[in-house]
Amino acid sequence: MTQHSLDNFLAFLNASPTPFHAVQQMQQTLLAAGFIALHESDAWQIQAGKRYVVTRNDSSLIAFITSQQDPAQSGIRLVGAHTDSPCLKLKPEPDLQR
Image (cartoon, rainbow, N blue to C red; front, top):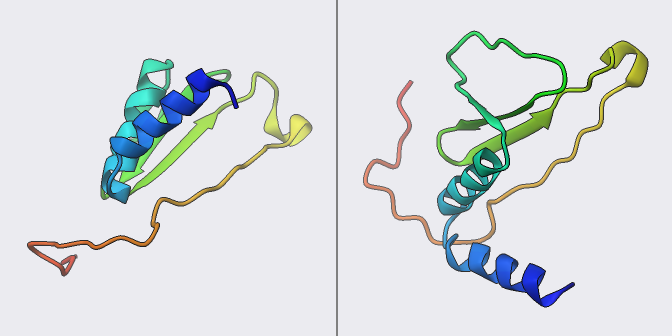
């Protein structure tokens, strides 16, 4: 790992004391890299060769890049990770009402 990469990683960790902060930091990074923000409640207009990011409850993030080729022919590739490292969460309203 280069010093530049290490410095960037440490800056990310320092700006991400909770999973919520980590999601916010990742979304900002992806938007700066040209990803298009989607909103879960909207009808999505997905186009080939574009980059997208969507969040849920400020604690989950999904980012994906669509292929220029038909996924039925080229397949898809998925990568997963999680941000729920052990941490103390103090919530003013701990119950999510639906």
